[in-house]
Length: 99
Ligand SMILES: [Zn+2]
Image 1 (spheres, rainbow, N blue to C red):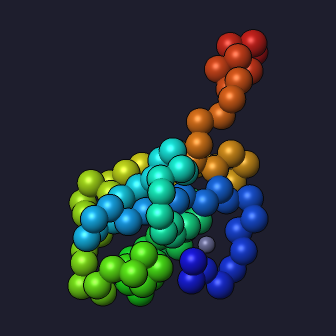
Image 2 (tube, rainbow, N blue to C red):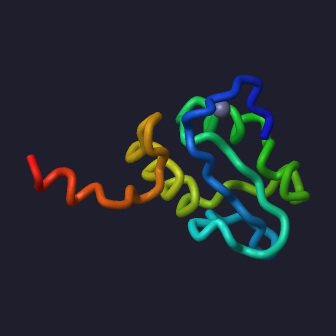
């Protein structure tokens, strides 16, 4: 997804095409064309700047990233770590309560 580096530990966030705009595919199972970005703010910013998402999703280059989507992705990125990515960690509560 336009990212020249490989951040192998960063889980990818999937975006999908939703009509004539784009949306976050938090289930990872939405039908159709998807675009993946690293859960890393610099990759997200670069993808937005280069209109890489619009290209990957075959949208017009002028289609803006909806504020709601930008907010969701930023939240997912700020909650992510290189170890776990943005997804919910199975059994995390268990581990925390044990200490
Ligand atoms: Zn990246």
